[in-house]
Image 1 (cartoon, one colour):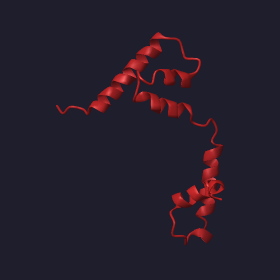
Image 2 (cartoon, one colour):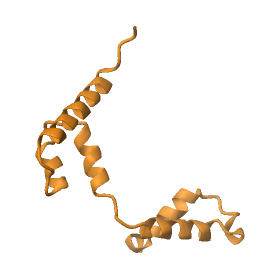
Image 3 (cartoon, helix red, strand yellow):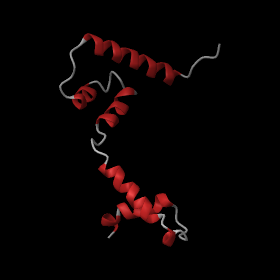
Image 4 (cartoon, rainbow, N blue to C red):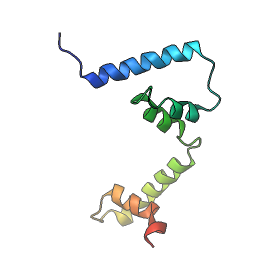
Length: 98
């Protein structure tokens, strides 16, 4: 039987440990603070949890990006040589560049 890489075992152990802690303690009042305080206990799980907690609550930003992508891919712009990702990045960060 092939052995798993240590990071997979460690991540699984962290998840199991977190689920046990979740069952045995009251819910945290501030989830971001919870993960900051337990960064050393869950070094692989905490960054992912903090990233998910800090996700925006609305889809307005994503919808704006889709709208800009639509404008950048219209027929009148289809002859540009730059990638859509590059054009979108430049468009969304024009205020920094100018």
